[in-house]
Image 1 (tube, rainbow, N blue to C red):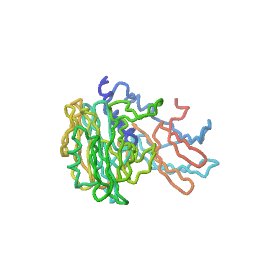
Image 2 (image 1 turned 90 degrees about the horizontal axis):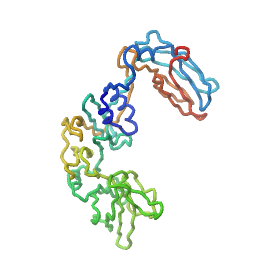
Image 3 (image 1 turned 90 degrees about the vertical axis):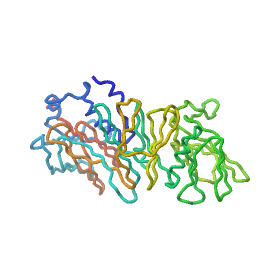
Image 4 (image 1 turned 120 degrees about the horizontal axis):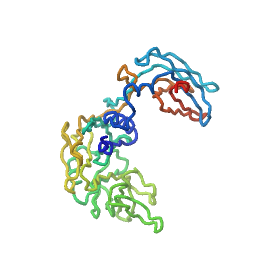
Length: 388
């Protein structure tokens, strides 16, 4: 067993996690994986059925699912009415070997998207990151991480990333004056004062905590560790007559504990690597070349990112490369059939309800949840009980 590989697999946040893990696990071929060959296929063969349940009801509707050849894709044409509900389930296609494929499609008004490839022993996995998609902003594991963060002003990206290598720099403060769409951006250095041009405001970073927390007894702000788990800064704003103080969190666009209505809209973006090697931040801006921030011997360094170059994690057998940067794209994940072998069967269906039609990919033995005003409908494509 190559247990060392298992411990280094990449856990990808939210939307990418399931697809990435499925692909990686299929490559590792560890002893704890599902049995292969004929034994594995025997657990997948029919006869099959589709179970449909509403809410917490014990009994559900059973619909038989039949195909002419379990090893070959097949077009289906069955409509299954859900009795007592204005819902139809239209079975449209059977695929014996389902595979999820993620791509970036260039589209006006889209987001910056970066295609990365993670490589290592028995591993090669494409990863898609985008600063505008909360589900695709980073990947992380015990041997390193890659995050993507965006600078609003492409003209100052090099200036800002170089300022972020200062030992005291913890991130970037974005400040919107009046109703401007583009903010002013500054490196956040505790104990330094920033004068806003053509305005009456001065801004100071009064305090930085990498792991923000509230002491339940004293009600004071404390840092639970020196790792940037929940980074936040306390800022002071001077308008020439009064001074206001406010906490800004990197993980929240606005303060959940707001006490004072500030005259300025501000956001804090953490770039704290915690001095940990193997951690990278890919810095992007519209129409600009990408930059990388990383730690080397406890110091933050920066350089222009080179497409196709392998950047190592702490375990040198594993690395990532930046394959392409899309300036304006959307990330799409679609299904396809990989082969004419019964390996990962699925039914492609459409759920018709209340004047809408939604595609549902019913993977074998995986419950599919669909919300209605009557409750949550659960669909399960499985072997018939009589076949066990």
